[in-house]
Amino acid sequence: MNPDPDSSQPQAARPVRRVGMVIGLRPEFIDEYRRVHADGHPGVRDLLSKYHLRNFSIFLHQVAGRWLEFGYYEYHGENFEADMAALAAEPRNREWLMLCEPMQAPLDGETGWAVMERVYFNP
Image (cartoon, rainbow, N blue to C red):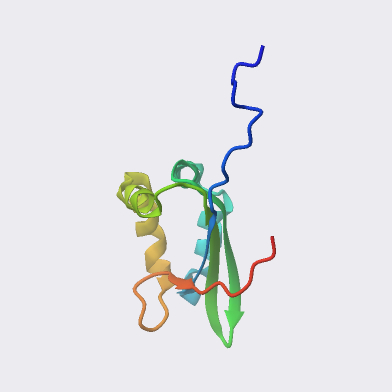
């Protein structure tokens, strides 16, 4: 007996929101930033999953003498604004941001991560 009578029916696929971001990283914090991200902070990682963020990745690269972080994630939820507000209110996330934000150097005209324009996607 099939416990889920609708399991044979294809589910409507939710559109995935793909987000790329960029921010500077202060050079004196490179080693510390790598260290705090090395273990993936499972207490924060579960929050990303809770609020429907998948494939969250951060890349670090030096460009013209400046260290930059490039972030990417996919949002698989139904209400991006509500989920991001709820994530922002989580005490563990707020603690994590308080740890990381002093290490970062937003780009000119930005106050935090700058969301990049996606110009190409190959499924």
